[in-house]
Amino acid sequence: MKFVLATQNPKKREEMAAILSDLGVEVVTEEEVGVKVEVEETGETFAENAALKAKAVMEATGLPSIGDDSGLCVDILNGAPGIYSARYGGEGLDDAGRCRLLLENLRGLTDRRAHFETVICCAFPSGEWLAAQGRCDGTIAFAPMGANGFGYDPIFFITNLKKTFAQLTAEEKAAISHRGNALREFKEKLAEYLAEHPEG
Image (cartoon, rainbow, N blue to C red; front, side, top):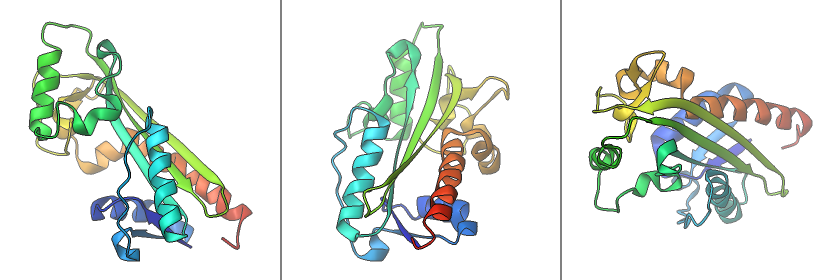
């Protein structure tokens, strides 16, 4: 069964394909099925944005489609940057700039509790849906640490490991991350779905 991942990012496809490979599922990108769908993320939650992406790509391809949305939520900032994580501070900032801006906005604040969240949605041409959610709790470090990962990883500190996401190996991060948790839950739900719908 072929699933289209609502992304132009081949690394995301590789990650999803590796997770779902033993279900007999083929994961392809939009480009590989000849579409490029620009989805305006107008949702107010990660779940709404993930669903918007999945639905738009499913309608464009006629194939089951998977969309996801993730972000960093800081308690004392009322959940910001949240759904705006990738656009925090405007389009002109890169990952390092967004990290600096967040640290600046937390200057002098001692409550630095935060969590990463991911929602994965799958839209089927039949009108059926699957959704999975993952979360990872931590705090915001006082300065960037580590060279791995991307985005806010250098300042997202896992208290019990005493490391930021950027100080973990890819395997260590996947074992505890919001995205890893969401992918594992999604795989379970998809396996159940495929068992109930062997014809696809």
